[in-house]
Length: 167
Image: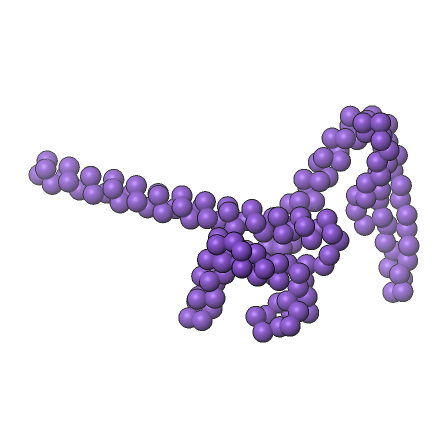
């Protein structure tokens, strides 16, 4: 009985290690994919380009800059190519992939996360400068909706900086 329980413990321990290794490998792969998607998001944001196109379906002529850049990355990056191949395989068999990271929700989440990060940097610079001003401008559009833009102006490292905060 002692030998059987010891063999069972060893088998379970081996299975646990294999499962943990598989999970760790999956986490690492998802991190690599996310890193590339963040780079694409940063590029589009810096260039002031729109993320989405007319339709994001695979048959659409204009899928949007985000998905088209992901497609371009897949030609030169094996991590993204493998990810897209898995997604296409799941779509062909009518199974949903567990994590695609390409939806418009994911794009919005990436944009929001980067916006929070940028706001933190701006806030730190404002705290260091100690003197700042806030500029607010209001405009009314055709549908009589008021929109207010908020801009912070401050001096950081002997340079006047003007940062757009929010509409």
